[in-house]
Amino acid sequence: MSENPETVDCLQAYLIRTGMDAQSARSLEALAHLPENVVALILFPDEFSTDRVLACARTLSAQRSRVLLLMVTGRARFFSESLASSRRQPVLVLAKPAFGWTLVDAIRRHAEAPDAGVLSAGGP
Image 1 (tube, rainbow, N blue to C red):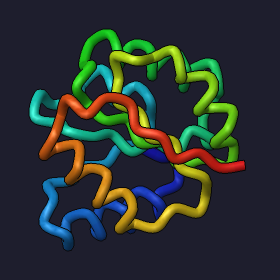
Image 2 (cartoon, helix red, strand yellow):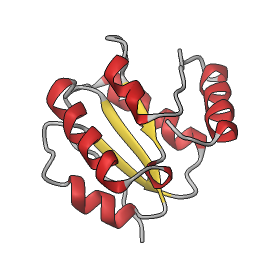
Image 3 (cartoon, rainbow, N blue to C red):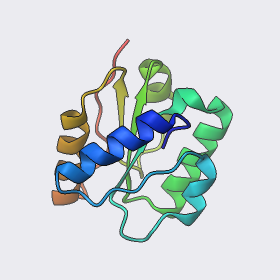
Image 4 (cartoon, rainbow, N blue to C red):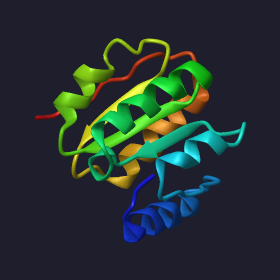
């Protein structure tokens, strides 16, 4: 999820090329309509209000605790610390830039072992 059309379109195309069924969205409001079969959500939080991102992460954790939340951000430490108490939700915070294969590997690991819990890969 990103407001940047190039980011969304390129990432979606990449994920599809790896064999994943990927959909994209450009607003946080799309979380309210998340399909039941979603395994992971990739979010670029720097493009949205911090308060809205954290509220959406809390809502996602409460409603869909098995969905892996992947955040790609220039503020990895902040988001890692802010989401640390969200132990019901598997979360992976990656520092920008993050390579597509890193996201794919994390999603595949999560899909194979959905009870893996919280993942961590922080950055500065």
